Structure formats: structure tokens, C-alpha cells
Image (cartoon, rainbow, N blue to C red):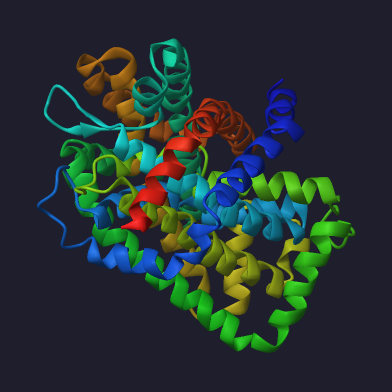
Length: 439
């Protein structure tokens, strides 16, 4: 049943809609997101100091909060699953989805800041729910409700159970820790963080995400430098497989062109969240007086997540040749890193997965909370937090295949109303961008 539903929602229509929306926005913006990558990095670091504007957290911490919910098992287990299911060519389609997704993420953040409002506690809130309601009008209120409903449900898959399951899986296989123990410890730690709200979440993300991302990147770069002469052949294999498919070898069953495209885009979106509508929930809380400036910061989340971090994982797996071993998920990444970096590679992936998953669960709790708040009001926050924590141990022991299917399916259903809103409000994005750069 779930496999059938997943095949429908991630069929040709959804892939065309996601890639088509990114392409349409890229063309409308004259490929500005790709041209402004250097400016995006400059604004990230400049955003550390902007603390006098309206909002609750700095633009930098808004990006870190977004990245905390973005950089997770998708960068380690997701990439490995995509390559196992779609072959090396899946990585090529992840790159394509990311480059087009930069425009999508930019548009999401611009609209989130432009149409944000103040909640009953005096905090800034914004997301697809609000830019649908405030930008499209009351006749489209049902679309915002649909997004909020699927976002609140999707969080329990993409942002909770998947993360907990991957942590317990890697701790059990690498260190022999029982899955239930991992889930219980994780639940307690998450519960302690959630008591502090968005400011504690943002503060934690601003410290943990840059640290672990740097460690993971350094380990990956060492692997690439040690195998620099083999990288051109790996790139050729990736591109060739994207358009010809991959032959069966070892424990690898082979993959068609369609499988490479489907799993590359689906896992790419799972990893960088461009088009899902989750990231603008964090960016709407940024202390900024310019929606375009925050959009430029936001789009860098997709670049950092996929073009940099996912590429490190994917190239390590392909260079190691372990994608034909029959392993999948986080264990495949662990296997690749331990082979390519014998002294510590396994621990870098294991520790990275734990930190990334932890921050993802924390970040997605904020997204789910805001979605539930939109649906049911302030009284729903505490029950949501309790349920969020209770589900973590359950996720740590669930069947991995079922969880991935459920998460993928809910992602698609969450993305659909957001992508429709982005297309309808694209003239606003184009106008605001043109005005900003004309100054």
C-alpha cells in the first residue's frame, strides 16, 4: 500500500513539478542564485552581527536553524540509499535538483519574510501557511491548511523517526548499543532542548552545526585528496550513469535511468528540503529588514547541504566501490569512510550522523510546532512537544524501509501546496528582487 502511494506521489508529475518550479524561478531570476553564491557566503557571516532588526534570531542563526533541520541523515544515509537504489547517476540528479532548488529556497525565504506576522506571544512567524494566507488571500486559505496538516505529519517521518532510526542503527552496528537505549537517551536530550524554545534551538544549532559540518568536510576532503587521481573517473561514471543507467555488479542490482532520476531527486529534496516549505519557517524569525537579503542567505543552505556535503558522501561511496557491496543507508556510508579513511573514518560518520540527526530532530520540532500552532493555536504546543519526544524511542526500533517510504510520501504531499503557492506568487519574488538589486 505505502509503496504504491509512494510511487504515485513521486511519479513523473511530482518530479516535473519540483524541477520545473526550480527551473521557472531560476529563469525568472535570470539565474541570480547561482551568480550570487559568493555574495550569499558574505551575507552569512555578515548576518552574525545584525541584531537590531525586527525578528528573534540573527540571519546567521536562522540559516543554522534551517541547516540543523536540513543537514541530517539525508546527507549520510539518504545519499547512500539514493546511490544504492539509483546507482552513481543518482548523485548527478541530486546536483541538478540542488542547483535549481537554490532558486526555490530563495523564493521561499523571500516570501516568508515579506508576509510574516506577529503571533500572540510577540514573535515573528512566517511560512507557506502565511504567505498563502497573506499573499494569495482568503480564497486560498484551504491550501495553507493543507500544507500545515501535511507538514505537521511529515515532521514525524523526515524530522523524527528517520533520524532516531539512523542513530540507533549506526550505534548498534558500530558500538553494540541496544536500539531502545539509543532512542531513550535521544528522547531525554531532545526534551531538555525543547523546553527553551526557538532561541535555545537557534543557539544550539549555531554552535553544533558549523562544528560537525567542518569535521565531516575535513574528513571527506582528506579522502578526496588521497584519491584525487580517481576523481575524474568517478565524475565520468556519475554523469554516464545518469543518462545510461547502471549495470548490476556484486550485491548491486543495477539501476535504470528513471531510477537514477527518481531516487536522485527524491533523496536530494529529502536532504536539502528545497520546495518542501520547511526552511522558510526558520528564516521568517530572522532579524532582518530585507526579505531579499534573507533569501540570499537561505539559498546557501541548499548549496552547502547538497553541492558540498552530499557530494563528499557520494564521492566517498563511489570511490570506495562499496555501493556494489549490497549495503545501504548509513551502514554503506560507514563502510565507505572506514575503507577510504582507515584511521577514524567510521567514527567520523558515526559521530557526524548522531550530531546531524540530533540537530535535525530539534530543528524539525520547531517546524512541526509552528504547523500545529497554525492549525490549533497556542494550546497545542505542549501536547505536540510531548508527543514529539515520545515518538523518538519508537522510531529508533521501527523498520527502516517502511520509515523511508512514509517520509518520502509525506514529503511529496507537503511540497505540493507549497510549490503551487511559489508559482502563483513568483511575480512578487521577481519584483522584490528587481527592486532590491536596482538600488
